[in-house]
Length: 113
Image (cartoon, rainbow, N blue to C red; front, side):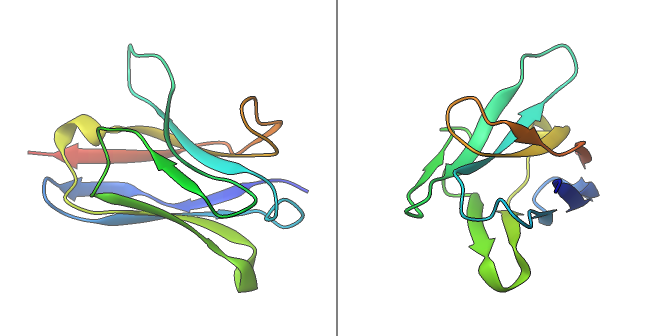
């Protein structure tokens, strides 16, 4: 099994993007989205645990939504009201908090002003 990411791309500030992470075999685990911007440390953006309890970084609260699509065995990150500072490579991760044993390869999100 592996985590296969899709979505992302380039958008203007204020726009929306949707990231998806196909996670067959891992969908019932704790899962999370991380991001890493150039020259910065990797940071957790959002997480969802086995009980579907979610957390968000303060910088994305009210703008990003994490969810599971159990029918498709996928982890979703819906991003709205995007800002230039959201530009980063985004990674999905699974099983389990806090270290996450499995990682996607990353997808670029670029937000222009």
